[in-house]
Length: 127
Image (cartoon, rainbow, N blue to C red; front, side, top):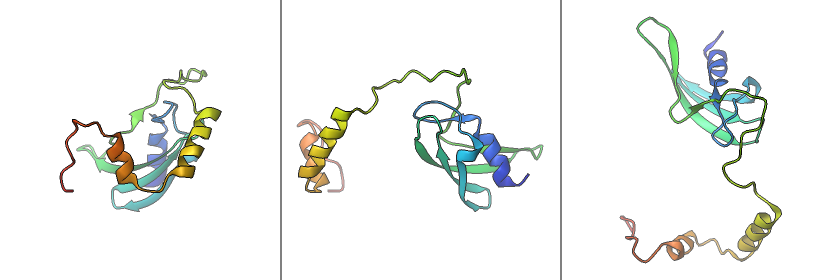
């Protein structure tokens, strides 16, 4: 088993950040590899969320490989039931609201975020 296959197998024990379900090997793509550094595209079959991760492979003293996965979380046990949503799903009203917003948005993100900043928030440094 080469490094990419080994890593793909290891990553199936990690869960989607959006729904918590385990990634399947078929939805894990190795985008690039530079020595022990892997750039990985993760797709969730359950909820469709996409993530890109940077994973390093290191050998411990016994020469066994392990993956340093940073912010990836271990998957919950598969109970066959969908996880309870922590937020409401996007609905038709949400799509209409976004469509209306985008129709009148002029592309000025600085103004948009400045307007949403409360009066007592300090101005970010470097401006």
